[in-house]
Structures are given as structure tokens and as C-alpha cells.
Length: 424
Ligand SMILES: Cc1cc2nc3c(=O)[nH]c(=O)nc-3n(C[C@H](O)[C@H](O)[C@H](O)COP(=O)(O)OP(=O)(O)OC[C@H]3O[C@@H](n4cnc5c(N)ncnc54)[C@H](O)[C@@H]3O)c2cc1C
Image (tube, rainbow, N blue to C red; front, side, top):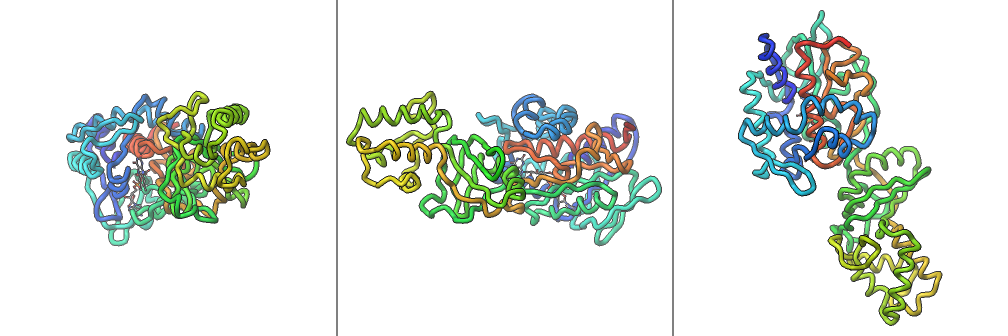
């Protein structure tokens, strides 16, 4: 949608006439926008393009690739475009930006209005089956009709949530033009563990812990909140690390997951605090203390923080993993037992990875190899006048509005250059 609107704007600027056709297999466009952000649509993120790149895209090659697009069509441009159709947006304290109405549909409606203003012909309920070269242009066949054009922009999305229409058709088309398709892989996906967490934990979150995955080589880590589900784990830290974990699982069959409940303290510091607690309150049951113990305390103190306390349901599991008796009190906590408790507090076992489901990911990584696409124009380096944009490309952003922004930005770049494909 952003690509089609950008084509018209570029045509108007240059005084050229052109006809623009948007082909969508669903009965209306923007199916993923509708379900994004839990129906509220986290449309972008606060900050300069440099800040968005830094925070939203953790792999340097992807950051490099997206740089031109995010500067060319930034969050400011996007918010102005939405504002021009009456969609005001509001920023949350964590930097995420949503339509103030809290309704994702308002974003789709705004784009629909912009497409109409731009006189874009829209064909719905027609799945594109093939795109072929025809002279200097293209021949595009859907299930029921065919089209010709001087330029084609592929914007068919990734591979997850296939019921929204994203079944990888664009990847097949790109491959037919000789593009390299890097293996699709889950990202921002929940994790399923071999043994599901006990039902007592389902729905519980651990705030601001360090989530750790080990399989071979250096452990992978991500700081953030974790959520226990009935099949495994979700929440920002698990979603963010899921892409790396999926890759690790392909390399090493056994990937173990842990949570460091006290990431701001080194083992020795935590041990000193436990010893102090024992001296202060020798007759207190260790389990009672853990129940009121703030999780991930700042500044090495057990004073209450906004991270909350260790969930009560987790305490029996901490005791079990540390092999401590339920009624153990501080004054009888021998050195080995203290060490064992420390080890569990610093690496609470969350189980082994069974699956990182591609279909359940908010995005999919993998796709058309970035090196085969000109980052300044989104034009294929293999096929002149063929443009590629959005999640179809081999990048994946973090949670926070970065993926929609990247899709709008790369789409805009493609559309802005489709009338005048730039020569490198
Ligand atoms: C549950 C969920 C929540 C999300 N929440 C957020 C969020 O809050 N913020 C955020 O930034 N990102 C979010 N995302 C990710 C974001 O929605 C996507 O990264 C983004 O929509 C990708 O844009 P795109 O244009 O590349 O592809 P898509 O939005 O997937 O659009 C591709 C379109 O191409 C159509 N299509 C595919 N094949 C064909 C064909 N053969 N013929 C015709 N049409 C075809 C599809 O029907 C689809 O409409 C979320 C994703 C999911 C699944």
C-alpha cells in the first residue's frame, strides 16, 4: 500500500502519468495490520531513524540495508501520512506508537483513503500465480486475470500467520527470477518446551530477568519480561530471542533455557546478601523469604522495586531445583545448599526447546537475500524494474513497531523509484 501511494506521489512530482494496480489475494488489504499489536497496531516507534535502527534491528547487515529506507521514509513521514487522513497517534512511555483511537482498523482505513486519493486500481480476491518478463516489462497472472506493467513491486510479506494470506508466493516468484531465498525462520515467536511448564505457572510473568539459551558455543541472552504459557514461554524476552534460538536449535539439537532472576548481581554479591539475610533472620524459612523477595532488584538491595516479587508459584520449583527441603530455615542452610540455591537463582531451569513455531511468529526471518536488492531503491540487482520490499526481504525487527515501519519504509522506497529505476 505504501509503495503504491509513493508511485503516485513520485508521478505527480515529475508530472508523469501512470496507472498503478494493487493486486491482493484477500478480499481487502492490510489483513496483518488489522491483527497487529493485538488489534491496536503498534504502527511505529519513537526516535530518530538512527535510534530506530539501533533499537529495532539487532543484526548489523540488516541495519545497514534498512538505513536508506528508514531515513528516506521515517516514522515522522509515516505519522504525517496517517495524520493527513485524520489518524492521530499516541506514544507510550516505552516508545511504542499506536493510533490514539487504539484501533488498528483506522490505519487500514487511512491507507485505503490514500490509495483512493492516489487513483490506485485495486484488485482483490485474486492470488498472483506468476510474474514473468515480457519485453522490457512484466506479465502478471492471477487466478482469473492477467496484467502487464513496466515495473513490478513484490510486497507479499513473510511466512507466518499464513491465514492472513502470507504463504510465501512472493518468495517463489523471486526465486523464479533467480533470486537467492534464505531459509525462512521464525522470529518474534513463542517457544515450545519438551516438558510444558507446570500448569501452576501458566500465565505467570517474570519481570526484567535475563533469559538465557544454551546449546553450544556462547550462551544467548536477552533482558526483559518472560511469560509462562501452557506450551512453554513467551513474553518480550522469549519473543526477541526466538530467532537466535531457532537458529541454535538447527545447529545443536538440545537447547536449554534458563532465567537469571538476579541479573544485576554477580554470584558473590548475591551470596553476600543471602548470608546477611541469614544473619538477620535465622529462623525465617527460606521459602517464605523467596516469596517476598523482589525479583531482579536494582542496586544490590532486596528493597522493593517495580519489577515485583518472585511469583509464589515459582518458589516450590526454586526449592525443588535447588534440592532444598521445604521447611528449611536460614540458620540451617549449609554452604553447599546455599550454593545450590544461588545457582538456581542465577539460572532457573526453564526446560529444553521442543519447537519454535514459524507459523506463530509475529514475523518470519529469512527471505530474499539482501545483497541482491539495492538498498537505496529496493530494485532487484538481478532484474531491472523488479522491486522487492517488506517482510519478503531477509530482515526481521524487534517488537515495538519496527516491522511495520520497515515495511512502510521499504515499500515507500520501492514506490518512489519504480517510475525511474535508478542505475547503480
Ligand atoms: C499477530 C501479529 C501482530 C503483529 N503486530 C505488529 C505490531 O504491532 N507492530 C509491528 O511493527 N509489526 C507487527 N507485526 C508484523 C507486521 O504486521 C509485518 O511485519 C508487516 O505487516 C509486513 O508487511 P508486508 O507489507 O511486508 O507484508 P504483509 O503485511 O504480510 O502484506 C502482504 C500482503 O500480500 C498479500 N499476498 C501474499 N501473496 C499474495 C499473492 N500471491 N497474490 C496477491 N496477494 C498476495 C497478502 O494477502 C498480504 O495482504 C505483527 C504480525 C503479526 C502476525
